[in-house]
Length: 469
Ligand code: ATP
Ligand code: MG
Ligand code: MG
Ligand code: MG
Image (tube, helix red, strand yellow):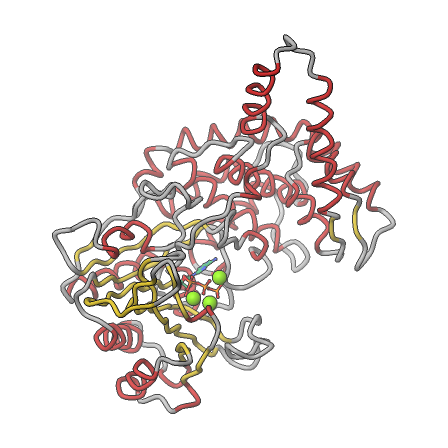
């Protein structure tokens, strides 16, 4: 069986043989971009190289990049456990050309890697291109021998990549595999595209324009290439399984979870095992990169991930701290590729254990309240924003934990009511403030409280710049 570790090295070695420098993954907290919540694509560490601000001693690179897509613009948190392909933490394999080769060679190498090295069946593959990108469509015909019906022209921004409002941009081309009509779903561009039959596994971005402030796009003198392939998705394809959660690495972590909770997954409970395994990876890697649970910003996204995993552990029948016990199984699976995980193991376990112990004190009481307050609600109903706020404020339930808990029943949360309750509480705190009476001092105090206070939840509001491939 082709393991996740084999796939990673096949990809990196192939591009190294083709003149690419192997570059290490950058940390999950981007060093060069304060507007971005977490590194969410391979190109993030190369942003300044693409714009020409930074020079490197190579013009081709290949990486396996740790990515987190939770919080901010590219948020896959709600998908996890419910689609076959979304994780909050995943590895993105990529090859990059900084003004070196362009479209033709990028497509040629991608095609060779996919069909020769990974041996995928050509007849099951199809691609999307941006609707005006005839050049890419012609290259796919020439290189892969695709007929027109295998080259889907997409007019939306899904196939036109921009770094931000200004800077390099260009069309992209995504490679999909058709996994057969026993799986529900339709090809990209159809109403059924959210199904899992057609799986996107690689995105090739052709950076060929420079966008200026007024929205004008001028051709770049030396166009560049940026690609991203989901390692876990490729593993699900090569291992012949239907979801990323059935690949070798996840199976081992899910087995460890089953022994920790003392029961094996069933069709009713499997989503909880998947959420736990995914969230275990993202929390461990975030902690290893220096993020700690907190009430705002990045730390709050981490806390949301941790608490959500903890609720799922209680759904599986545990009452004690459990998630921290799974860390060794993750380190066994991924420690070789990521030595930081090994070095940080004790700190990761301890951080998780402390957060579990803290949250478990209020979790069961909060769940009881949630159950009572939502007892009469069914599909299409809404939980009062006040209740969601009480759970947040008194029991430490992040809003999305409450939403996640109600989702399977089709119950949503009145977010406007939640926001209003939050605003009311802040106003109340201001009114009751009996400090020195010095207006200037209280203004300062409140602005500090607003950014650092325990009821702040920047995690929902902070918008990322677009860092995806
Ligand atoms: P999707 O449409 O499936 O959400 P995407 O178009 O958002 O994917 P890209 O931004 O193009 O994904 O990222 C490049 C590649 O990274 C994808 O082709 C996919 O293989 C992988 N990838 C993206 N998001 C995830 C995720 N949440 N979990 C696992 N792999 C992912
Ligand atoms: Mg996506
Ligand atoms: Mg896509
Ligand atoms: Mg894509």
